[in-house]
Image (cartoon, rainbow, N blue to C red; front, side, top):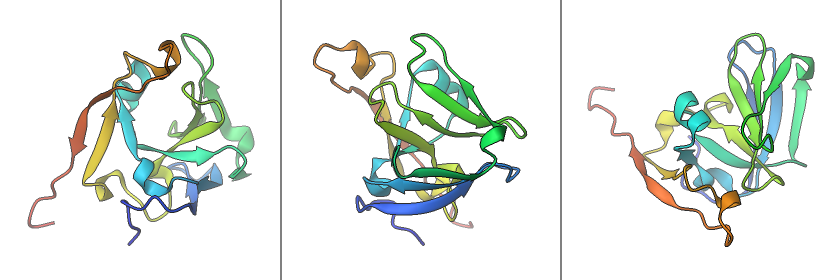
Length: 148
């Protein structure tokens, strides 16, 4: 089992639900970078994301199947499989030199492997703050039932 608390760099393979899109993602901050956000798109998609490097992200199959969604400032690029609709990754608005990678798409991981995930306040986005501050909205916890 992978240590979800580790901040050590790690590279993992990933794919969308149907397998049309396959990729490798380098996570320079490890899995300790896991987070959720309360902005409109994050709230609706419900994914836990980890920090990925743009240089360390490679699509091996299905680049032609990736679709991109932009909204509001149009600076963030949200990528998803055009076949199954699963969000795989996004280029961040808060730091365009980083990606957010959907944990559920990474091999050997599940969002339910994380006991606690920090939730950032998306209504006070760092890109809109003169000091580029990040605000925390809370913590999302998963407490598995005893019979699981």
